[in-house]
Image 1 (cartoon, rainbow, N blue to C red):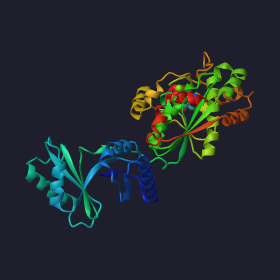
Image 2: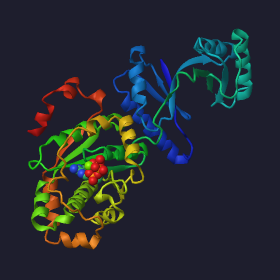
Image 3: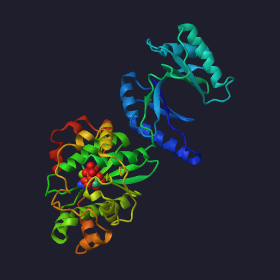
Image 4: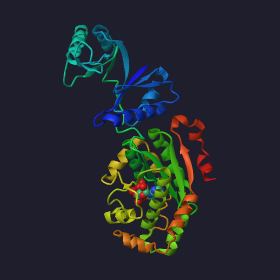
Length: 404
Ligand code: ATP
Ligand code: MG
């Protein structure tokens, strides 16, 4: 079977466009690895050929997760001949069709007819055969005909499926995402991926002050996100020592904010190693004490690197809805011992300044603590589900193994 993949070309010009197409092609090839499909690039479209019928559902499921794809459809390839095209159009029209229209596009501008002429000619033949009414606006079924070189591709609006849109992962460079185990940060990561950024994940745990389960959860979350962006890297970083030092040497009310500052610093060091250009958090304005404008500013001043907060203007209900669509929600709501609720201050500061925090952490050897955390980091490479062995995903001992 053959599928035709469309992407939005708006705003894509010259060199950018060729790069976008090249990256999208590669992302689709990666996503369809093992299905037997052959992927090729044409002007303005991507064609997926030789999809075995038994694999169609799987191929469609994976294409729905490739950023950059606007929509796609299984197509029939027909020689350029109005009678033949109309016959295929008829075959594709569902039994219950109440009205239709033909929509034609020409990639080949040398054809001896215009798109409206083709629409009328093919439409008239379908009317003769069925007596169905044509509705140019609000047709029940649209018969799409795309002319390309020697052939036309025919499909209907009923079988067309939407892709996630956006830009293919890699088109916008790399970011480091601070992934907590909560609901928000996976959604923040997803939004950056959708804009073409490859996400490298960093999770901080307080083991042995808390159990290791938050790290296991973050791994499970990255497994879901790997189905969207392909193989993903996850750094598991021990924060226990940093937290002990902050607990012993810094004013209680700034504790959470100082944990956050260290998270940003450590993430920044990882971003430099990874050649990533920004840090990403799941902060939303005013959601908790650490996410007031003042505190976000004061925390953010610990690093020079750009800190992006793609959820800053979203409500929790919007984030939850997004998390459900992405597939991370069910994992995020599992209970965990949060590293930041560890030794949480009773009255956290809601309006700190950068200077307050500088003073609060003056007694700490910051570079040494950052170095220590980096030295203790574990790095996992997490492939998308179709490249993980079945046993890997289902192993009931997996969390325990992670602990060792
Ligand atoms: P989330 O749902 O992502 O946990 P939240 O609204 O609960 O967000 P906080 O827990 O205050 O907010 O964390 C704010 C942001 O700080 C998170 O979205 C995440 O980017 C980062 N963060 C917090 N804790 C961790 C952690 N343990 N490891 C990595 N990043 C973290
Ligand atoms: Mg949280």
